[in-house]
Image 1 (spheres, rainbow, N blue to C red):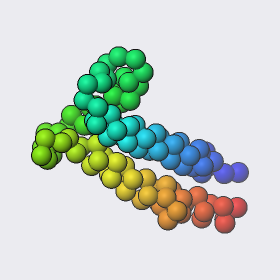
Image 2: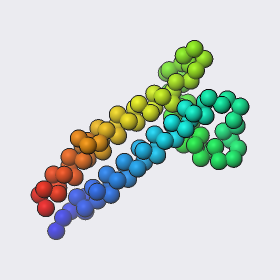
Image 3: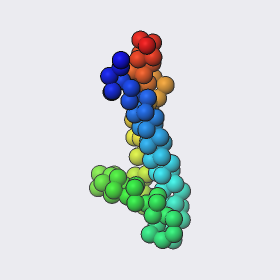
Image 4: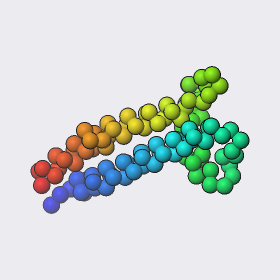
Length: 106
């Protein structure tokens, strides 16, 4: 009988992968929306993109100032999330390796 944590690892792997992919898409959409400064991010469906990403961007704006008047913080977060995703659930990621080890032991 497998311990509960070992049984949960495939679900955790999937959940983290989907969560990080969703955040990446949200930040990519924020990059595209930055090209249209007249769009109000508080109206329509735009809050679905702006509300989850704005706390991260606000924190990063304190550290990384705009470059030439362009807010580069969404690009910073796409890079950070992509790196974290690769390290955790990528092809050679930590959780992926644990999952493969569990499968070989079963």
